[in-house]
Length: 213
Image (cartoon, rainbow, N blue to C red; front, side, top):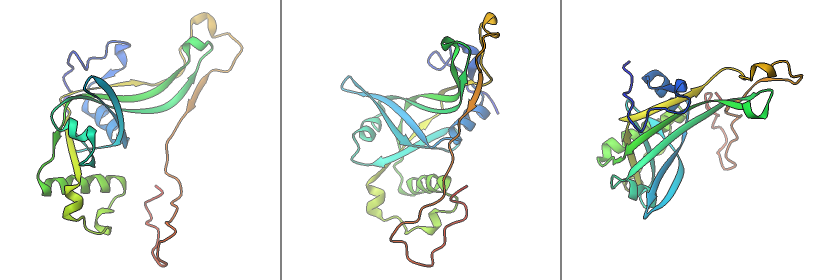
């Protein structure tokens, strides 16, 4: 896969060796997540809104109420910045200065477009739902025309995108390696817990086997 071409906005400058521009890394970070943060400004006031997202090819999508001020504003083509990040480990060094974290992050600059076609919008939402729980869409009550009309889906092309990644253990000043305190890596993970059925679930409906995976 070809790399994404860095731009003045996406080129990693601070600790530039951690910058990544290859599709494999960027796709992997995006596909490992569900929550992004979108930065934008309305009338000079900056906002950062967390929301669920998904990726299809070189494009990310998110959705919400058609009445959402954020979605209505971004649908006009207003500039935005979308970020996704994962904390993989805490890094405990021998000095407070060199404590750190292992992380993977993606930053995307651009402007969103609204998915207008009803069939296209439905297909995008189906991909989103099945991405969270494989096969879930076909188990659900069909979406009504009114529900579809009340839902906005926005798309953002991966035209200006880069990743930044830290791996490995602590890096101390050479004279500190003999300091008598523990140093190392504390891994972090996000995982699904055991499913908890709705109190109003009718008897006889089994728990899907993949929900806890």
